[in-house]
Image 1 (tube, rainbow, N blue to C red):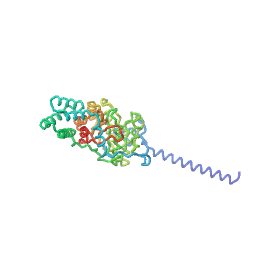
Image 2: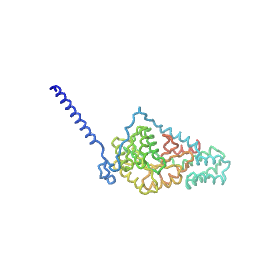
Image 3: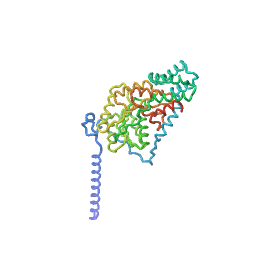
Image 4: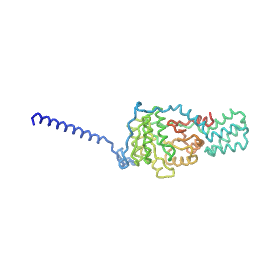
Length: 378
């Protein structure tokens, strides 16, 4: 073999060693930069601020898609209530039927009032609010009569809006950066879907959002939430199935703090309101989050069709965490719309959002006048 050949092989070997060295350094740096998770100290604040360990790794969903990758534009908030009000007006709602029957009556005798009162109670308005409404209407319409249909409708509208309490503050408390919203509720209320819809509503208001998939007990929950987020370019932080929900919530808020995100929404596992251990877990999630950011809202999602059972759920959740607002889902079709008034009276907190239908933008800020207009078919 010639001297030139030997030099060539020496050069090739040297290049190979250099490449191998570069690869080795990059791998080591990658490992050092990779997040580590330690589960100790979550509850007492002794940890390093990142955790997961035996509870499963916590990871972010894919990067936010660009507008050219199919990101959707959510419906503007202003047009939602008008559309949802039309849907409510065309529904087979028990309250709407009761008001229509009353306004179409030729005379307001004892039987008419008894039927009206029975229908209101069956629509979950509640005994107290029903009695208030009937007494007020009997007093006003008894004096003025029902002959003037326009005046009768005005009186009914006034009293219904009063019952719905238009003076309650229904805006979201977004006073901190990030503002943290925890969504709670029992199984089957549409909670994860509502989280996705709320994210769309906030994006439509030009808010940046991070979602935390802290429902780690339902296999498809994180994937479902990630899909909602991807559609509007929102990052979702999730963990392995069975991971500690508090660790996932913590990591989501940590990401929100690091990025200067406006709002972090935490989806929690649906739970039976009678299970004390699961209710205690909500308190833990809240305490862990508040080690780095303020929880500004705890929204309780209630299926409007559950009626009095929904009120029982509300009482227990309110004892476990400080509920600041209600989201009523499925408030269409045969839903008992009286629960809007009943649940506000029960908890002393406002209904902040209503959902009518299964569309991706079928969530709107509750408006007392708009809700009543829908019930009256206006």
